[in-house]
View 1 (tube, rainbow, N blue to C red):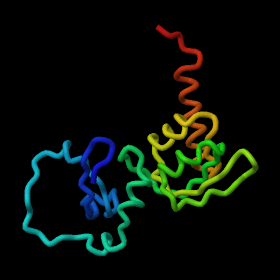
View 2: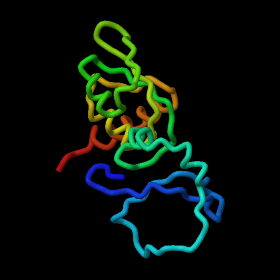
View 3: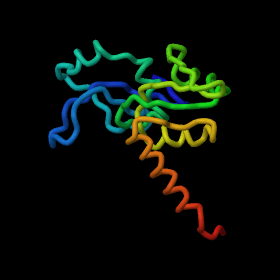
View 4: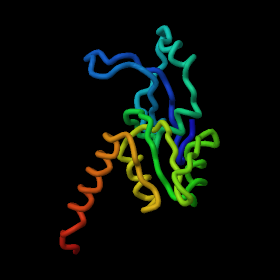
Length: 154
């Protein structure tokens, strides 16, 4: 697949031998691969790929960094509807909050890149749920405030 000027290999990765990472669909930047070789081994992951939805997968990732996928509710001013449709597709449900705001609930890979995207959209957009994702955003805001708040700038 192609995203943001980069090619990615989307593949099945079995459980790691040390057991620390579950198997499943992964993505790898092609230009970062080294020592590629063809193996004469039986392919794994056929059942995972039968259920795999590439458009959904690409919409849920931000900058091709993975994170835990969660349903996240975003509230935004009406002027941001086009941005949300561009990012998540035309199939999202846009629910009015009042005359000026709406909410959407979408599956996203919760990551620093996702939080940064929300921050970049400005004060007209905010995460309203779930609580643990709101707390991640508060932590990011606190870190940025500490990083840039009172520090002397060169």
